[in-house]
Length: 381
Length: 259
Image (cartoon, rainbow over all chains, first blue to last red; front, side, top):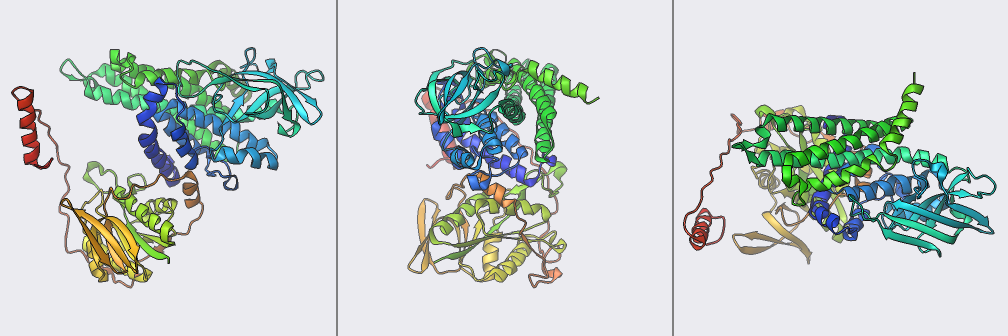
């Protein structure tokens, strides 16, 4: 795998891994157990540029390519799925749309503090009655003088509990055209902006996933991203990048599970030999290794195509679908290798198993991905 | 005042499959003992100003070590690269490095790692300082500039020695003395944005081919074999106190802990 990476990418991986091994891995179990967002580490990550991976230098970013981005998300997720989630959502579905669709003034105002990690971003699409079907969105923004009056109930917002800058998908002027979806940026602290209770989730517990509600909140008209009615376009473009990030996250979690599986198989002895000498275990490890490598290749390929400036929707969707399902399989096998201990909190594999599950659900479920991929594959004929 | 600090670094071999040494980009990385050295240089630059030059000798694959040094904040990088350098032992290496350093003169400090992760001789730093005819201090823990001289501390056998040395001086840096910083992603991005690494050949150094490489090396590595490590597990006898005493005795005898 390494041979397809350039020296730059290898140094990116080495330096991020070294940081994660020292700063994140030792606290990963604890922040999961306590469902705590580790600000002390997040601040360090911000200073090192982890929150502005692809943002231009003049806006405080590291200006790296998508392949570096995939590697960084993979490495952080290898240490902690929750923090990998924080970084990928912040970079790809909060910062990226502002960079791509924002005006110069909006970029300076929001992208700079986001890229420096001084502020955390969130993407607010899902509602109680809208998720995979974005047309069901009920949030509204009605223009009134110099502001939109926003009413929204957004749920399962990743980073919700700590986000300062939230991209809201809503219907602008619903009485004129109820299908028109737009994106309005709301900042925490705006009157009427309320952060709901944190979700008590199965995995990704160190990420403060919450609901975000706005009650008759006056958000300035200049907070509209792009133009009215561009919501679906922004959403689709953003999700291509976002899906690649989730694929990278799944690769990282699966890699961690593979390493733990191998380690345990070499240490634990049954029938007078290490587990790794039993063919049944070898078969599992072979499958795990192959799945991780295939996921990684698909993810890096999607990233490389994006770096070449070509459309990568299909590759990104396939990478996300495959890597997330592979991640669930690999973490499941890692638990199996550990036997009863794998089902206990004494070993990290149960955390990987829980963290893995949601990668098949968020940023487009496996089923939605299959719909998208089928359309693309059949259309190519 | 600003210093000119020269850091001599090495791209080391991570793995030698089948006992064959092959330096490729995949199989090499910056010597881990050189990271504290880069950190020491950058900290001195941050306090006193000046500039840092990184030098390495090796094949093209060694470029990666220089690029990593650049991401650290080094201002100038030089790759001493020439087919005639192949097979250089530590003496021939110090001949080439010494000539390179003379070309970079004037400088105030020349810094080395105490050793390399792949050959572990620890000879290149001291030998190069002899070539240059400048003072040398090993295993340095701290470096301060006071009243026109360097005040340098080293720890050896439970004693702290403090030296006062004039510029220029050569030092090897204790691996735990300067914890290397994490590389900022923007530094990595910037390091790879421009291609300004200078390459010097043996002729550029004013040396002849017989002074370096195989021809200039009085030592030869005859063979290289992996050591097979065997572990033996022994259970100490007696009650807990007796076992603890026996354990303390053995650790003390082996030198693992102080008597």
